[in-house]
Structures are given as C-alpha cells and as structure tokens.
Length: 215
Length: 215
DNA sequence: CACTTGACAGCACATGTGTTTGCTTGCTAT
DNA sequence: ATAGCAAGCAAACACATGTGCTGTCAAGTG
Image 1 (cartoon, rainbow over the protein chains, first blue to last red):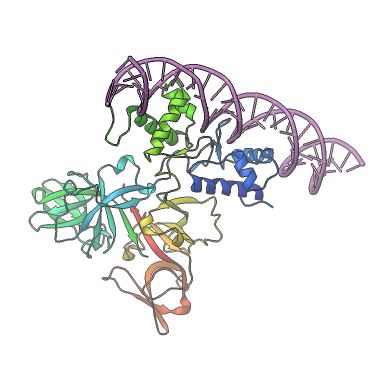
Image 2 (cartoon, chains in turn orange, purple, blue, red; image 1 turned 90 degrees about the horizontal axis):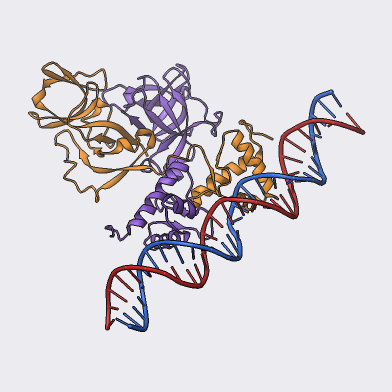
C-alpha cells in the first residue's frame, strides 16, 4: 500500500519518526534510533528506505555524518519563531509610546510568523495592541495586534502610523506625498482619504503586519 | 578576558560557532568540527569548554550521542512555531476546497504564532489565502491569510466561513441563529447583515485568526 | 618555595553509526 | 516455470566521534 506521494507505509513511518524525534530531542536520529524504535530488523533496511526518501526529496542527508538526516523545510531556517516586543496600546486619541523609552527587555513579547517577516527585517520592529475601532477603516479591529517598524519617513503607498499634530491623534493609513500636501488613504477603498499638510504629519512607523486572534 | 555572562572568549566563540553551524547545516556540530574550524589544538579542550558551557546553562548535551549538542532555545522548547497547512485560496465565488481531500502532507505550510493558538487547539486548523476583496466587510483584505478550524456547527457570535447554497458563494461573517432564520453579520458594523434560512447555510469552518503581511 | 587551580595539549580507546556485501522472499511479466 | 525486481534481512566492516587519561604551563596563594 502506498500513499498519494509514492511513499511506502514504512517510509511514511520513518519520515514521521524523524520529525517527531527532532521535536522531542532537538537533534536528528541515528539510523539505529530509527531501527530500534520502529522495530525494524536491520539497519540496512533503514538505510534502504532512507535512500528512497532522499530520492523522493523528502529528506536531506549528509553522507557519512552521524545524525546528518535533516528535513528540507526545517533544515536551514531554525524552527524558532521570532519575537518582537509588545510595547503597549494604540488608540486614536493618544500618541504612540516611544519605542526608545520603553524597557524592551521587560516588555511582553509577541510571536511573529516567519512568513510575515524575515529575521533581518525584524530589526526595529515592535508590536502594539489596538484598542477601540478607530482603525476600522484600515481593516484593523479592536484587539488586533499591529506590527510596526520604527521609521520617520515613508514611501508612497506605505501603510504608516501617522500622528496628526493639530488633531493630536494617531491613525493608520496609506501614505501619499502629493506635492505640498499629504494624502492619508484608508485601506478600505470605500472610505474617504484625509488631506493635510506635511508639517501636520509625523510618521511614527510603518505597518508591516497585522495579527488577529478570534479564539 | 570574560564577557558579561562569565564566558571566556573561547567559550563565546564556541557558542557562536554551534549556533552558526546549525543554521548552516541543519544539524549540530561534532566536537571535531568545532576543534578543526576554530583551530583548537585538541578535542579535549573543546570537551572542557563544552562542559563549562553546559554548567553555565548555555548549551544542552546528550552524553555519548554524536552531535548531541543543542542550544536551549531551539531544543525541545516550545518556542518552535506551529505550522498549519495552507490548503488554497478563498474567493467569494467558489466553495472552499475540502480539507479532507487535500493532501495535507504535500501542502504548503504557514507558521502560526503561539499567541494566536495553542498546539492543542491547532488540530483541524488550516489556512487559506484570501483572493479579492469580497471579505472586506469582515475586515479581511486581499492577500490576507485566514486560519480556519474545520467544523460544521457554530455558536452565536462565532466568525465562520459560511457557504450560501443558493447563491453558491462563500463568505466570512459572524453567525447568529435567530429562531428559524440565520443572521450573518459583517464584522464591520457599518455594513448590513444577511438574513437567510438555515438550510441555505453550510458552515465550512470557524475563523480563528487572520494574518496580514504588509511587507 | 610548594601547592593548587584553570586552561590547554596530545593521544589512545571504546563505542556510536553509516555503509557494504550476500542472502532470502514475494510478486509480476514474459 | 523462470527471470527480474522491489523489499527485507543479518552480519561484518570501517570510519566518525565522544571520553578518559597523562602532561604542561602560567597565575595565584600561603
């Protein structure tokens, strides 16, 4: 009996075992680990099936190296999830907390999926919890967590956290520099943009991601 | 010379080397790898310093096991990000792909932050990429990734992926059972709910999270 | 000065571990 | 039948790799 991707039952078991072994121990299994735990009679059978798995691209192997079996998708990129500091809350009526001021070491942390950002890009990234529905026109709801990258300038089209000096309010909008004025465009296209002058806008960061948990 | 956390220069180098080695190869270095690349004269020196690192809690070791050095934070720890299968795309006009049908092993995976879900809850969770802006009234934009938990019933107030049989369309709405009829309420309160009968609605899953990357 | 201690060197040894070689077994096509 | 082949088995082999001595050397200590 074979599964959809052409693996024998035994190969599926081995593949699953390798995965589980690494989860549990933090390092890869030796051929004899597989043999013993899967009650396979001989190491050569394991070797035989490992070769098959390798040919099918399910695993990577480092010849001659002990415990050199690795799984493609977990291999080079460490499985560790990234964390960024959760520095506080963002509300329409208040300026953002200054990232510099907050004791980053003591701050709460938020996991960030790798898909959302590479480690390199995570420098200077911090998170804020959204309070209230003032950002609803940016498709951001009460309780969402926004990921911001600290920067004071922005390119056209960037979604930014912008402080309107006169109004003393923070808002999340798409940023467009149009000659002398600045257009702040809601992400929701059915809503109207804000026009203002550039000295009335202070960019506090660029929005790089949004996380929403509905549990 | 010692650094702040009481490590000798050589120990720092070794620690850094272990980390780098794993990043690069996907498995842990052997003592002789460390010895050779760091140009240390003897394996015993490496062993000596590894023991020191272990005493200081900087590394974990599995005695007698080849390449059994692990770093605490990558090892068995729960910092590992969870992954759920990304089964396809959700569009207003089409029914969802059947989670059962899709070969889960071959599917693309998406990292899910721990904050969004515990491992226990991740059973039967899958992800879909949103195409188009038909879900905009649920505060979900084109390109977002929604996390769904497979289930066919829902409680009042749950955000669900509901299929409207007659219209042959899928939509993300809040679910309310009101006597004989069902109310599907957009998350955005400025928008109008849909009323329909219960036999016109087939729940395909509950929305448990949303990820949006603006990179 | 004798003595201790941390750090390093060199080397031998035991065993952990991947590989190879022959030898069955069961199945399929000729 | 018979050949061919995937899959499994057992044992032996050979190198990879962690460990355990035995020393050396410099810095401290009384």
